[in-house]
Length: 443
Image: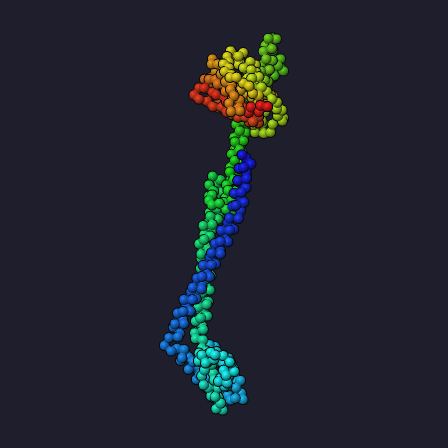
């Protein structure tokens, strides 16, 4: 199942990897195609308009007549004869929109082509009579290209319109992506300012989506680290406060008793033994506090030693709990109510660390449990897990001291390292501890 999920995730990432590039490529090609069509459409319409305008009302004939007059004037002024007929090339060069070819004997020229449509071709070409300065007649073929500057302007305008259409359409097509990039940039600035609770916008299914998901994962990781840091700092503060308060009282008493012993301020052996007894009690009280300090480092630091797991039958574990682990509870006058179903499986645990779990539970029972009510222990196997429930009533206390729950957190971490779950809750006056351990697979 896990492998299939990973394969699907890889395929999605591979598909997403080139999706943005494909979208940009298609948008560019489409915009370019529209720009070319727009340029051709504008130039075609403008050419048709110019052709209609320039050819109506005899404009072409007038332009030809003006060209012939200019040609004849040039011939007369420059005395162009048959001997220097090449001067006509100078006139042609000065004409920007006139194409001219000169013939001395057009009839003999066309007589050299042996073709049936010779007469039709001759009639389609416009030839005009021109007389040189020495009286020699020649033929001039003139083609006037009217309004060339307008056509050049149309070409330039069509190119500008095509490029404008390409750019505008491309920007419209990728506007959503650009807007999404700008939004991610603004959200990054907000995160950079310290507001880590600001949500990252996730949309689409391309490389930008992968980027947004990466930012979101990074933000969540930073938030989790900040939460753990705040929790550790709070635990540090609570520990320092609790330890400084709890240590000061027994340490002051211990120093006082030691000073009395050092100065031999006791009346008899009985008072001496009483002072020694108090010193011993205060020393053990400080030892318990040092044990709490160890538990704190077990929760928020590294384990003192690696776990040594071994397989233990579930029935043996429960018999140990019911018959010996809570012996102190029974010695104090409490009773056990063990409700154990048939247990056939086994669990893999570290017995030394599980002993610490029992010790912590016993310590909590001594502090907060009500000995007038039985300690109920339930055990059963469900869904490949061993379930253990401990239930007792909370004793009413006059001076309530807020617990740091370090012992319970130690239990939670130890059971978690054994692959199980540990939870606790209080419902009214009833306190319930639940523990789950995975069953070993049967051979």
